[in-house]
Amino acid sequence: MGLLSDSYTLFTREMLIFKANLRTNIVRSAIFPLFIILIFGNINTTYKNTPVAIVNYANNPQSLAFINDLQINNDVNLVTVTNQQNALQMLQTGQVQAIIVILPTYPTLSPGVKGVQVYYSNTQVSVVAALLPVVNATAVQASGLVAPKPQTVPVSMVQSDAVYAGQSSYKTFLAAGIIPMVVIFSALFAGGLSMITDRQMGNLKAFLITPINKNAIIIGRVISSGVQGAFSALIALAIGIAFGAGVAMGTIGVVWLIVVAFLVTIGFVGLAMIIASRVKRVDAYAIFSQAIGLPLWYAAGGITPIASLPSWILPVTTIDPLTYATQITRGVMMQGFIPFNELVFDLALLTGIGLVFLFISMRMFKSTLD
Image 1 (tube, helix red, strand yellow):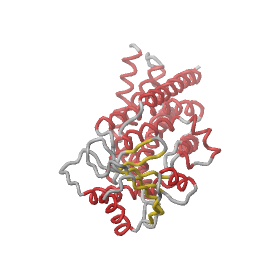
Image 2 (image 1 turned 90 degrees about the vertical axis):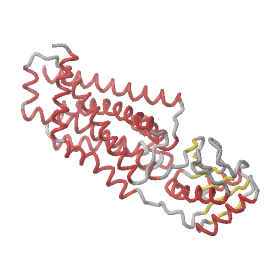
Image 3 (image 1 turned 180 degrees about the vertical axis):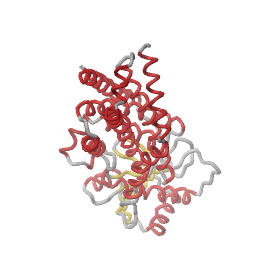
Image 4 (image 1 turned 45 degrees about the vertical axis):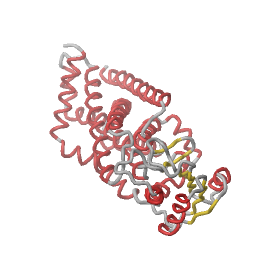
């Protein structure tokens, strides 16, 4: 038998085991995102009494009505500033937590045209994400323009040079960070833990005495783990959407999330089998995998913006593959687009890391057989 046919046979075997434990796998994939969204999803999401600078470049009756409605209805502490530069200085010094810029194009509901921009501090993303829907609704109401199905909303969030879609929220931010975490724990479970279990039950020894290509044991497990990782990502996404998250890129964005989940899985399954080649006990492996997975997820900005992390973590963030996976998921879910150069770099890096870990795991697995 050839490598491909042997790999397919072992892939089928792994997927049948996965199917036999489908309920357990669904619960395992759902419990992390459900717990994190319930606990962290509403932290600091109140916008009441938030100090906000407002710059009115439109200076028309609709913009004045918008400012008036925002003050009366939403209890936001507005500070009027004459220009955007002064407002940005106030944001940097912490005098305000956000800036609302009413553009000269306001009011508008034209496709692709923004009438209002909301600038926010990295450390206050959750507060401003809660404020954004209120600003959006007030801006539409004050504009006096009514469209049955407007193509765009007149408000966008701005962080540095990134313009986020109008439906962005902290729950979307959080869900986009949770998906890579769920994927890596699925990979660590499906890869290393199942390898140790097979060794303890004697299944691995049975594979080794059969006339199959020994690399197929790794390849079949990697492919099946990739499918399981994509499955876990979809469950995490569904939970996020159920709690109010969105996918700005739509259906195509879901496809991109599956691709990213598969690439992340390849790398971490390889890492899992490297650990499993040296660790013989399930409890010890569980400690090692948790000690690796959780810090990498935190360093990638899974729960807070990277800019708000301590400076000593940033070197880890730079070499952390989850950082680049999270950049793609947030681009898909929050921005609705990913710059081409950034997308190519992130995908190439994830693919390269995955292949390196896969190669090392094959070498180490063979060394355990000698």
